Image 1 (cartoon, one colour):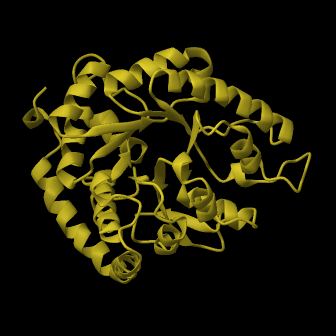
Image 2 (spheres, rainbow, N blue to C red):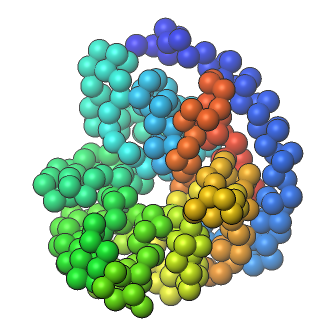
Length: 323
């Protein structure tokens, strides 16, 4: 189906986005300027400004309704270069059937985009690991990961068993030239129910093989973890083992004491998470692909541009931070 036959009017989208970008820029200029000054004072940040990525979960409504061809073309126009997948399907009405992985790869290549990783269910890793690695090879992406917690058992034993499982999956990924990663939420930073002085994330990190198991630090959820389970510095994990963190989720949060998490999820640049300090504190010893994610983008804004508008404004703010 051609783009012109869709109900989505790209010119209307661009006009709407232009107006809302100005509004956000006015609101967040102070924070972005401060971040830029901090980056300049410490040299180029270890998050490359020319490899800004997006987790497609942030615009899942658009991927489903409009399809990968329209969405990926728009993301390339905005300036995104790295794509992290949250599934490989779209509404079958777009093509009259489901899209295939080779077709998605062709859309990526045609738009100068690179698949950097994918979130798959931990159950898929257990039941279809080689199939998920096949998909990664077809799409040309170097990482395959899961956003599930390592274990549903918040015990030391549960996390030790999970580490053993991840080591086996990671070794299988390494054998095919790929990297397996785990993406955190806040719960991984809780203390073990059977050993209340032991942080679960530390058990997982210590007992997974750094040659085969990598981490994607979701910075927002790490700071939520710090708020709910104090006693650690998110940047210290990266500083101590920089090469284990090839990917970051750069999600912004705005302080809200009435929220049990301590922060509300907001567009990047509209919050107050200490990103400039985080970038300074992780040090320069490795490069980390910065991937924008906003769990709440779909349905929160007038549509169009909706979540794609949030993607454009957040890209602008991220570019300012890393520039």
